[in-house]
Amino acid sequence: MTLDSRRKEKIGNVLLILAALAVLVALGFLLVERHFSLGSEIAFGIAAVLLVAFVFVEPLRTRKWVTGRQARYGSNAVLMSVVLLVVLAVGNYLADAHPYRVDVTANRRLSLSQETVDVLDALEGPVRVVGFFPSTAYPDQAQDLLSQYEYHYADWESTFYDPVVEPSRASEWGVTDTWRATVFIIYQERQDVIHTVSEREVTSALVRLSRAEQPVVYFLTGHGEPDLADTQDAGLSTLSERLVNVGFEVASLNLLITETVPSDASAVVLLSPITPLAQDELDRLAAYLDGGGAGMVLLDPLPNPEDDSAALLAWLAERWGVQVRNDIVLDGTSYLYPMPTVPLVSAYGVGPIGDGMGTVETYFIEARSIQDLDPDAGPNYVPVVQTSANSWGESSWEELSQYPERLPEFDEGEDVGGPVDIGVALEDRDSDSRLVLFGDAHFCMNIAVQDAGNSDLFVNALNWLTEDEELISISPKVDEDRYVVIRSALVRNALFAILVLLIPLTVAGLGVLVFVVRRVRRPK
Image (tube, rainbow, N blue to C red; front, side, top):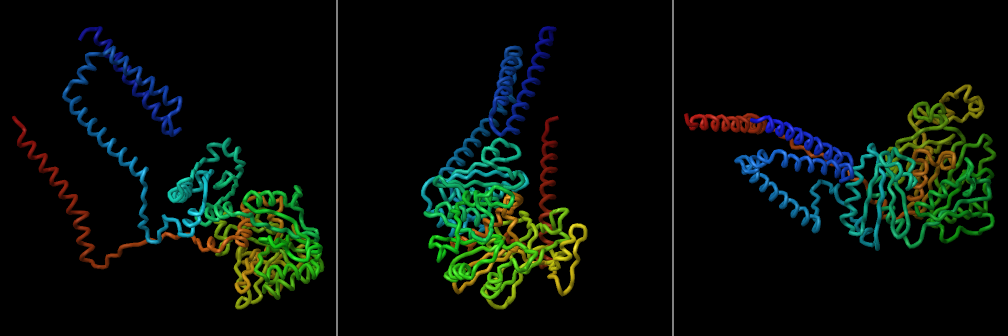
């Protein structure tokens, strides 16, 4: 080999190494960005230029590689690989053009319920879904569920982002809670937002968006209640904006100047009245609920019991069988540090309201406890928010006045021991009337409504008060684990012998036999 040929061989080897490095860089770009970008295209282009340069520098070696025996064998392998890829591509194209699914799971957990399919069949026009899923929010499960909707509804478009990876996109959509899922559902120029991606939540959003008329929620006024337009800490402007965004129409109502609740009311909310309700007002509210209406009452603790509306408390006890105690709930285990008077809740009661919360936390600022006076009679009583077992309802305002210098202690016989209810759902199935009762109103005011899942809890409660019954029947599907238990020792031993001993030994024996035969037949 001459000096010139050696120099060409070295140059050729360098060109091959550089081309291989360029290909690795291009593949790295593809793995990170998951699409062809300028960086990957440049890297592939450099690799191609280096290979062409190698052909010009080493034409003899190139010809040898192309025409040699190994090249012929390699070309056959490449041809078979290309044929296989073509078959797979055609098969995938046909499967994409004519999709068909078969759910063989025990409880059909990979299929939508018939109620959801009926809702999708009634839709007209495109549905667009924009989801923001951080890596900690199990995005694959949520995307699998949304793909089922896309399978049943052809005019469905889903786009997913990671708000941590793409903060500019999250800012564009106003996503601030980057620690949890946020899904925007757009239909007929209307938009709904959900944070728990389940069939019940997605279908409920579709029903709200497809309604011809928006549900109207009236907030009672005239007793010093927070204002819907007030942007201060004690106002409701943020809650009002959230309700409008999820498809509710919000309005004020003064029952002192109106003889009846308007006929278009979907629900009536009484939120933190400072002065007592007049008997006429209470009679009009009671008549609306007795006629199958829906209401929500949120009452804060009041140091002076005389400030409470005695008529309202009596109506809650007599008509709904519940007592709203004039105490403050303290939680020694789960609270917003360092304030045990601010219980922190992450587990909710079994029911439509709690099911939609998942494990998202909510907190309550100086809540009062709620008791079921007669569990065996009266309307159906379902706890929605419950504090921990290490909590109690402190009824001594003298001891509470010494907080935070001195923390009150639980007094047996006077205080109610935990867990205590601070949010309940009541339903009278005879009249189809519903009532949600909270022992705190601060959690939905501007000071706290944007934190954790506080606004979600209020919205879920309104959804239960106003939603169609068929949506409530959509319950989450639980995986059913099924096992094969072999009780016969003979069968277990036979399976062990076949799978662990016989099959591996047979494969090893065939290998040894082939090796020996080739050695014997090898020409000497």
